Structure formats: C-alpha cells, structure tokens
Length: 68
Image (cartoon, rainbow, N blue to C red):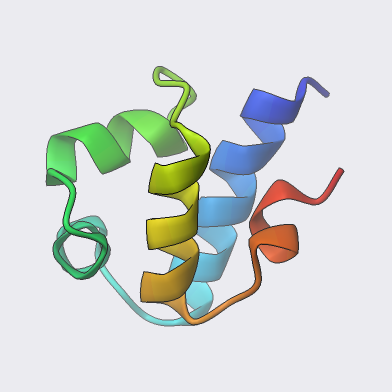
C-alpha cells in the first residue's frame, strides 16, 4: 500500500478512536475541514507541518500517523 493511502487510513482510524468528526479535528489542527477530508480520502499530499498539527490535535505521535 502506498504511504499516502496508509496515512489517510491511519488518520481516519485515529480520528474515529478519539470520537471526533472531521470538522472538529480540522478546527483543532487549524486547517479547513474540506482539506482534512481530502487528506483522509488520499486526494491531498499534506506537508509534514500539517501532519504535525494533525498529530498534535489528535494527541498522538507522528509515528502513529506515518507508520512506515
């Protein structure tokens, strides 16, 4: 599985475990909810800075998202 696809799947799994909506997580990460949704669907290739902000919003390590 390509890393980008795995990132989207990992983000969705972690978000659901934290019982957050895409909108709630996007607000916490200070990104648009549309952009976040596209990341989960593997339509965007987020920067490391954005992934760091998402990890912080989820209160997980970056390695939990990247997982490769």
